[in-house]
Length: 113
Image (cartoon, rainbow, N blue to C red):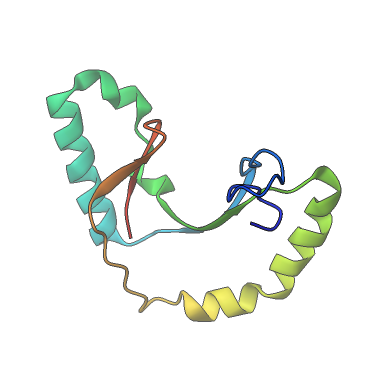
């Protein structure tokens, strides 16, 4: 694919994401559900506890990207100029349905949307 090189075609190795855009999740019901999942994980495997993210830091990753250092200021400005669109689209009445748990390369556990 363009810029990623992950579809073959001799474009070189795939560049790993080094930035992501996320939306902080503040729903008390979601926090309670996540805390219950975390408690169940720790009950089954106590050594996982230090690896868990506090529920207050839960977020929904909207997208990931790879940016070169010189691209960061332009990306930041683009996001700032469109922040109002994200706020409108992800308002208080936004509903997300989670389909269970999955992993990124068996290193990061996440709730699939």
